[in-house]
Image 1 (cartoon, rainbow, N blue to C red):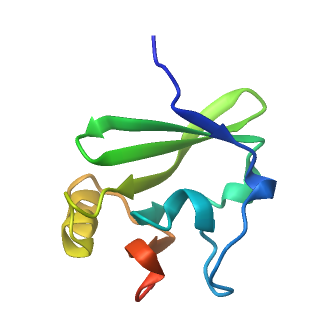
Image 2 (image 1 turned 90 degrees about the vertical axis):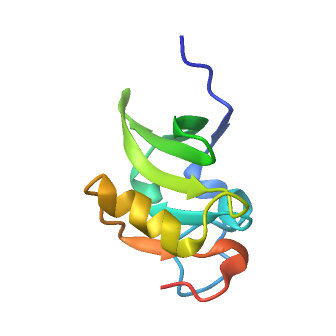
Length: 106
């Protein structure tokens, strides 16, 4: 049985960078790849190391259905380039990618 690490209501998150759709608190210390808009979900759930060591998976839950919403990469384990390569190897194209510490978001 999957144990969820944390649950956070999307509406309570605030982005530090006005141009960034990523929430500040959960992702500021990690490289983050946003796959879907977090405001579309009722609940966000995080599971660390589900698909790989150092990669947290964020699921968005809407009307009882869960789907991939984002991936967060531990910066001590992945450089931004390695995180982007990890996504490409799996055929994933993020809507937004943010580097740990909000440095150089693209």
